[in-house]
Length: 298
Image (cartoon, rainbow, N blue to C red; front, side):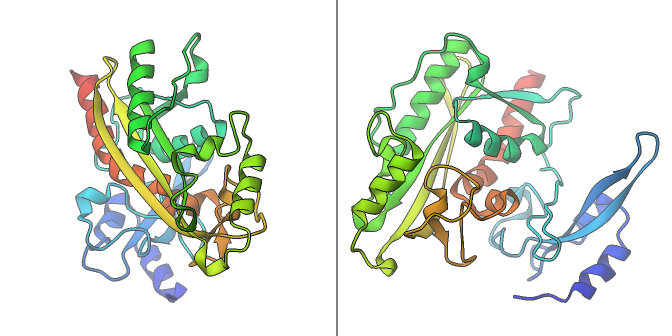
């Protein structure tokens, strides 16, 4: 779907405030338009330069404007992302802190990119001493996420976000599923897991290698009570050769047919709109912001 760049430039020329940018967004418009203002200049003087962005593919028209939370998205024209905040953007001078129950640096980075624009400071459990490892013995992503969130929260007396995610390949009966991180054994690495996956898929035709990623997120109060959950999925196909250096896990082998690129090739801007994790957080974040804001004010 191509949209004339001149049309956007004409709109951008007439937009000089974030309010005007929001007014351009119409839920019944086929091409919803938002404008991201990127700050340029010096510490003593600054201005905002409009960049036109589109979100026609990122946000279903069935979603209400209030549920979408964030306007803007990946722009096929200028490869930028809007940083317009959700309606519940944290308004206190100090960002709300949320501990993420993971030691995976790349996963923490992805979650931070999704939450910090909404005023939520992400902290990993590596910043805390003597936190016991949570045994992920659940038979579903939801069970593992809830257990990690609850046990970590009670151990450190903080609000904790935990998520369990993994790859499910249709022709392998949903494997590796909840065992994605340790598919090749207790001492698994990304390389060994991918090698085992390709071995299991040997002889299976490319068109029968359909798969999907799942991300289940759970939010626990300091008392260990699960207050919120959400799940997102993203479908693709497994290919034989690794492509791209971005992401982690099975990402270099997970092809998104519509983009003709793997998760390993896609930029973080694009991945943070369409991945399983992004889709879960798109639905979770507006509720999470309201919850944390209410707790901060109580």
